[in-house]
Every structure is written in structure tokens, then in C-alpha cells.
Length: 91
Length: 241
Image (cartoon, rainbow over all chains, first blue to last red; front, top):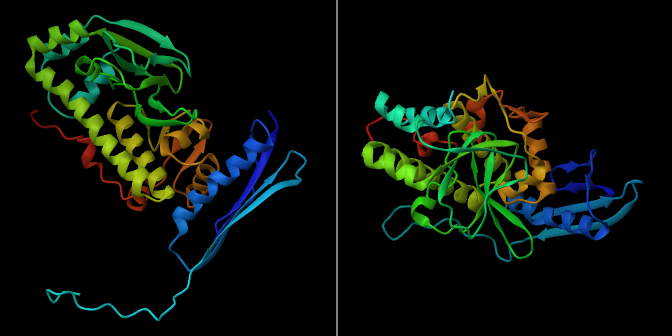
């Protein structure tokens, strides 16, 4: 089976795949790469309002054959109100 | 050493067994089978007339989706019955596979019932082992549902360390765990690529070392703290059951 290298970034930490994995074909490599995006997002969101997660697939010749980005673009539309007291007087 | 030695060690961490009880367990009729890595121990939808006890190696309970994707719902280590519940469940809703080369003892249900009749205490201990399986499942559900990947992986490693230590299969801070990253992904319910990232993260932080199928935990307390691991659910306390 061909070897693919899947590089990833969660917006904080970029990791270059030095070992690679054997996958059936280009389509399988794309799926493997995309599957990582929600997993990475789950670990880092809601840390920060702006974040770019990306995955990049290189083939055995180290050529980039596929690249995908998942972007978080969050912003307040109104300034957040400070926390108000609960009805029982607690915060 | 009989095939029941790990089981007796495992039970001894939860209660005191009399010599008679040890003899009853050691005397159980069984069929010893070597199952190679990847081989099936129990098939889904089967109605086994035996319960399978792991003597050597690791086994996994697995559920397959029609897409072909797999979720491993439990790992069993030496001393564990993988399907004691089949005694009452009758029809299996999942299959059991060897994660590594295994040696298993298949005990006929009528033998287990014979021993339970002779010793209700042993019956309660067998019941306890299925109840602990359920407690482990609860911890796994919380991990899959709510933990970050690093916490989840760390929690699994801490759990395996405790379970293997109870059956004498740890060597200082290390234990054999010869599974692949794809299998780890099926255990954690994570993508293969993200499991690789998470492993690298824990390695970089000095929390785990995994080389040649051996896992080492240089700082078990540190890993347990990071992973929010509390061993209470494993019930590794000796008290009358």
C-alpha cells in the first residue's frame, strides 16, 4: 500500500508527519486527514475566537496532494455583560 | 500455574478467597485455546455455552458499524472473563477479538453453575467481575463523551496500569501493550491521525514512553492528575463481597 504523510495544525501546534502511514489510495488519505479536523477542533475550541486548523497530505514523494482548512471565526456582536447575581443571591 | 491464576489474583484484590474456593476455581473444567492476534474468540450473535477467560494476552470487545468502522468497547487482560455475562445474556451482541496473541480458557457454563452452587460467595465474585466491567464501561463512556484526547488517552493508560498491576503484569513503571495505533484509535473513538498527535503530545510532555510494544509511565501520579484518573471505579479494595 502507498505511504502518505499527513501534517496537521490545530492553530497552536503544527506537526509534520515524519513516519507516514500506509493507506489504500489518495481518497483514503484525504479521509484520514479530514477525520482529524473535528478531533483537533474538539480539543482546542473554545480556546480563542480565531483559529485555523489545517491538514495537509503529502505522497511518498513528499508532494502535497491535498490540503484542507477548518476555520473558527468568532466575535462578540455586543460587549459581553458581566455575570449577574442568580435569583437566590448566589453568583 | 493453572490458567486460573490471574483470575485468582484479580479476585484476591477485591476479597479474601478460602483455600476451598481457590480449589474450586482451579478445578474448573476448561478447554485451553491459543488464539493468534486478530483471531476471533467469540462471535457476535452466537449463543456460547462457555465463558472465555483470558490467561495470556489482550482481547477486545468490538462493535462494527455497517460502514466497516469499528468501536472497541472493552479491553480484557489476563484474569478477566470476556463474556461471563453470556452465562445470563445468552445471545452475544458483540464479538471478541484477540488484540495480541492470546491464550484463553473456555469454561462450560454448567461448570460455572456447578461452582456457583457450591460457593455462593464465588458466585457473587463472578458477578462482581461483570459489575466492574460495567464500571469500566462507564469510565470509558465519560472519556469518549467528554474528555480531551490527552486526558482520555492518559486515563486509559492509568487504568491499564492498575488492572495489569493487579495481576502481576507490570514491571516497575512499564507493561507490555503490543497494540497498533489504529487499534488505539478504535479504543478511543478518535481518528488515527489525531491519536498519533495525542501520543506525540504525551510523549513530548514526558508522560508516556511507548516503544516496541512496551508502555512506560515515568510519572504515574502526574499522568493520573492530568487525566483526572481516580481508581475507585476499579474497586481494587479487599472487602467482604
